[in-house]
Image (cartoon, rainbow, N blue to C red):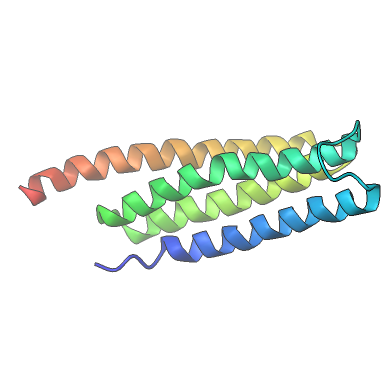
Length: 135
């Protein structure tokens, strides 16, 4: 069975990641800071948004592709992908603001954690379900 759902979300998330990278680079150029943050809280915020994205998204995508490989229902994989994209966008916008939007940051992290938890449980459940099928 071809993997067709996860690549859609991986592609969208890759574009968001590039956007976040450009967002950091633009501020670095404006502030003439090539390495570190030199005490700029604004740059530190952008770096953390970018870094946090890089820390959580790969594992979520691994869970999604595993779920797709073990033939979990398509709607569950779409659910994981939509939660992840919405969560990461809320987090990026919330943390990137000055002052920070704690509400959006919290929603973003809750949705990201929900993706990890649901993805983990989904993989455990469907791998056990497929175990009997695979013999």
